[in-house]
Length: 413
Image (tube, rainbow, N blue to C red; front, top):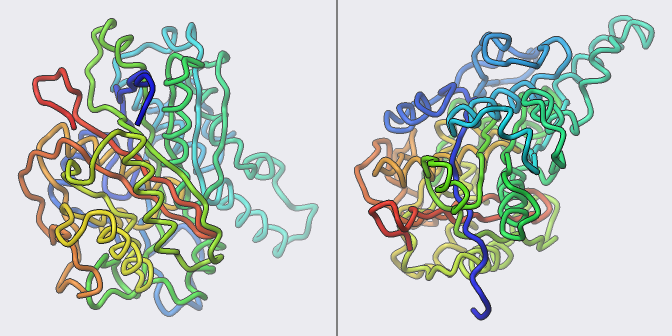
C-alpha cells in the first residue's frame, strides 16, 4: 500500500445488552464461561411453531440505567441501543458534557428496527381495528429511532445520527462508518454498533425458510440444524488515538481497518468469492497480512450452507491452517443487526484479556468446516490481531480488523 498512514482509531468504551450479559464486565465473564442464552421465547406468541427457542434479553430496569430516556417513549431495540451507548460512555470515563462539546457520529446498525412494536400494532389491529392502534407504538416503529435514542440519552446535538440497515452485517458497517469519520477528521468521537429486538415477523421468516434450530445453535458442528434468533445491542466508543491518549483514556484496542462489499449474488445464499474478497480488502485496509491474524470471530450462523461457505472463503484467504475461528452465535443467538457489534466487543475483550472465547454446543466439527472452532471451553491465548466477520442476506459483507494498541506494552500487528 502507498501513501501516508491514516489517523489511528481506538476503542475506549464498550456497552453490551444481550441474553447472556448486561454490561461489559458481565459479558467478559459470560464469554469466558461459554454461557448459552437459549431459552423458550416469551416475548411474542409462539403457538403453532413446532419449536420456538431464542435468545431473549431478560427484563431489566431501563429507568435505573438511563438518565434522559423515558422508557415509555421508545421501542425495545432503541432502549437496547441507548442502554449500550450509556454503558460505553461510562466505560470510557467520559461525561455527557465532554461529548456534547465535541463533534461526533452516532451510527447504529439494525435488521428489524422497530419491528417488535410493529408486531404489537398488527396484533392490535387484528383485535380491534385501526382505531384501536396505539399512537405511541406507531412512533416507535421507524428504525431511525435507534440512533436518535442514543443521541437523546446522552444529550448530543453536535452529531450526525445514522441508522444502518444492512441486516446481519450492519454492526460492522456502523463501526466502519465511525472509523472512516475519525480517520478523515470529520468527528472527534463515534458511538457505533448495532441493536435489534426479537420480533415474530423475523422469527417466522427464518422458521419458514427452515433455518431455525429446534433447540440450540451449533456453529460448524456436523449436526448443526440452523440458527436461533436473538436480540440485544453492542456499542463501541471510538476516538482518535492521540486524542484518547491525551485525555488519559484507557485504550481497549485499536481498529486497524475494515472493508465492505456487496456481491449481490443471491437474496439468501452467501457467495464464497464475495466473502473472500471482503476479507482480503479488510486485511489490506488494516495493513495486516493473513499470517498476522491470531483469531477470527466468524459470522458462524449455524446453518448448513453459511458455515461451509464462510469456512471455504477463510481457507482461500488463510490457507490450510487458518487461525482459531469461533462462532459466538451459539452463546448469543443471531442478534441480527447487533451480531457483528457484539462479536466486535468480544474480539476486543479477547485482545485485552488474553483468551479465546469458545464455540459452544459443539459435538463434532463438520469436515466442510475445517477450522479450529475452540469447542465448548475458552482457552488462554495471546491474540494481538482479530478479524471480525459480518455477512448478510443479498451479499452485504463487512469485516473489521481489531488489534492491540502498539504502545500499550504489547505490540499489535
